[in-house]
Amino acid sequence: QTPMAQLLLRGQLLADAKGTPHRIDAVLFDKDGTLSISEPMLHALASARVVHARTLLQQRHPELPASRGDELAGLLQRAYGLNEQAIHPAGATAVGSRTHNLISTATALAQVGLGWPEALELGEAIFAATDGLHGQGSQQRPIATEGLHDLVEALNAAAVACAVISNDDRAGIAAFLASQELTGRFQACWSADHSPRKPDPAAVQALCAELGVTAERCALIGDANSDLRMAQQAGVPVVIGYTAGWSSPPPLDPCFPCLSHWSELEVRVSGA
Image (cartoon, rainbow, N blue to C red):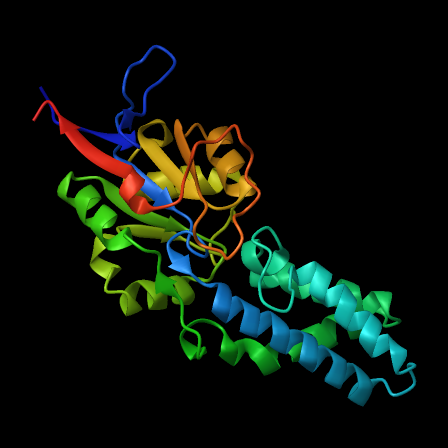
């Protein structure tokens, strides 16, 4: 009998409706808020974008009333999911790509009186001024979520491939994996540089093809409903929410099983 890896969540074998355990050939992980604790870095980044937005708006458009700066700050804070201490785990900063956040920024600038070309141009300037706070340039570098190394080691030992599917760019993913000494443990990644991007289910299919596995023999773990629904639509049978990557748990659909520590997930090889 061919050895087959299976997953147990809190001691329960993950199985189909008939009770047949799912064979798992690969696990696809979201990055920010799942593999990594990115909230301190993202909070610093979003806060800096708000400050630079106000400053650049006043410098470049002195014809606008000063009150527009306050209005802009409020719009951006809501769009980014930013408050004084935390990032909302379902906000644009937490879930969206750089492009998504740039469009959010330009939209806020348009709402305070700029034309769309000027709003996009100013948005680009804001991001250029703050990009050094992201990823490896940040003073708040992301660290791996607790227990991740042990789980990834167990998956590798069971010949289960590991991959990242994220809206960060390829360089950001590679830098995080290298900083946590995980580069050799992950066989592939799908990033914001790829097309289509998540949450398109075709992104999952393309990543599976790169790994040489089928979606029907994968698990996907993420911290956003968009990730989990994407996996479901792509035909991934084991879809799990991860809730411990943010200071407040992400608002995940209760239809998905969740875990709050990697020790809740166990790998078992049967038929060996």
